[in-house]
Image 1: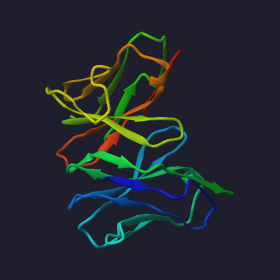
Image 2: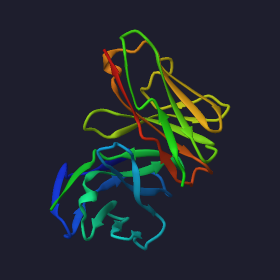
Image 3: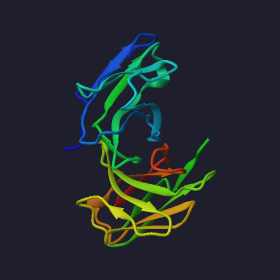
Length: 115
Length: 116
């Protein structure tokens, strides 16, 4: 079964601090991508970071980095130096059927960054 | 950057009527477009995939006669909710891919549908 599990419905962090969002997944695919998307109150889905499963090196994008543990099927997102603009819903996802457009999403984590 | 625009951003329709939602890629040609549905405070669920000039592929459990998808050009896909009912009220989001399957899909801003 193709699933994505985000076990933290809500999290909060102080501005400038670091926070880690958890995600586990299950897939029968051999080659796949993993994603973290941000959905602010505007509802626009924004790609935060993407990881190719066959790459062992963890992806990083400025203040955002992932801890990808393939054997454990774990894909957590670390946000460093949190900013007020990071307040949003964060969805973990993986693709299937060989297309990055076919995405299975987790239920999301609502992150609040407090001043 | 790649911009995908949906129209309208929100729509209210009466039960039993049909409503059309447009998804346009503004600065690229989209070989494939995807339609998702997001219930309040829930995740996105893929409804269907459409390729320009061919029939859409619907996910299991999605009624193809109720959710009509047309991808008539490389920059436009439409989703028509036919004979809408209150349970069809939801947030509908499209995404579009410019290149092949291993390229990023860019999301539109979504359309909030309320059926009264």
